Image (cartoon, rainbow, N blue to C red; front, side, top):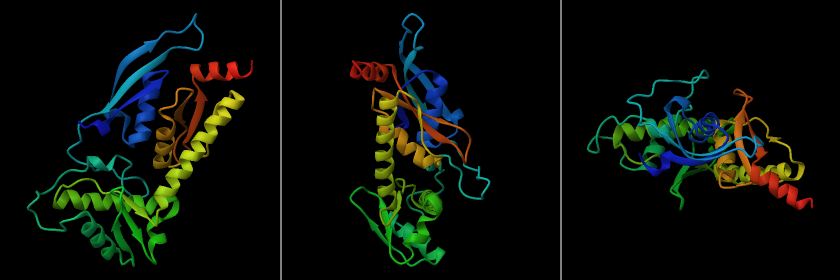
Length: 244
């Protein structure tokens, strides 16, 4: 288990920790294990308890067979794809070559470049087609590219972007998350964002996970599942002190 598959969260319950980690990693909650690191007792029964927990993901499943109802790849994390073959097997030898092969099979006019963040960026006349509605197409392409990696060399996971779409969207969502956190602090109420995809919710959770004054959790059922941002006990104290 690598460090990428462990996360420490401040939550009110173990169930909330599982829900958050499930959104962040885009995996089935059944694959997550929670360990309570610290528990802050309620003050005379007020505010409820506060837990600091470590969530980790179980070892990868031997196979990935689940497919979403729309025929696309499962939302299960792509890192769980099985390794079929070995480094000596035939096939593309680099991440860029694998993506170029996939694009060729799709008949798209797209250039492939590896950027400084070790993310493969797609550009060219058909780059917009590669994004798709809400980024669904590029996510499916990323899934297929990683499947090809596992079948050829079993190398590191491929991350795709198209004309900087994901990078721009991540920045936009991070700004939105912090703006919503300010609204929660100003109003003292839980702020609900518009429904988002699991990838978008993950960005919001990560943008605010290190803040001590607010906490995030997902509510609802897809496709209407959304992120709720609420004050922590520390956030309530901070808001009260500002008013005096």
